[in-house]
Image (cartoon, rainbow, N blue to C red; front, side):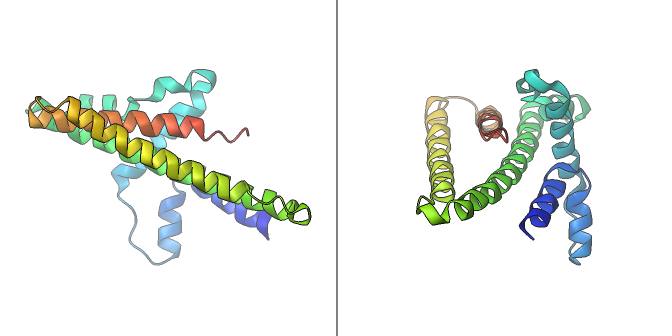
Length: 175
């Protein structure tokens, strides 16, 4: 039962069309197609680059900026980095869910020893990281207080995507 659940989550987490298929099965509206494309682009980049997958940070934003026909560069950058940040956040969430299932299995296997803390420590680490991320973004905004508001917002989205990408790589499945 648990193995089938894990395989389902891995499929949903790594197959580009899985969120659409899952939403359709559940009778829900399909997620934003653009968002799925962004997540798929990141997934393909990360999986294809192996050891050099950190170069994928900024991948969606670069594609978006090239495709953007908007005349206001700051607003286009804000939109593009916002899309990138959302795609990284989706990947982080998916990876965290997979690791949470792994931690639950670890805890169930060591239940006899009374040393069940894989889930608790994973959740504590994620909560600590979220606090760090929020504080880092607040600090970043404070430093950029004198910048034009459009560029400040674009830079904030860029910084958020960098932090999320870093967290994605930190939540390695090779643990």
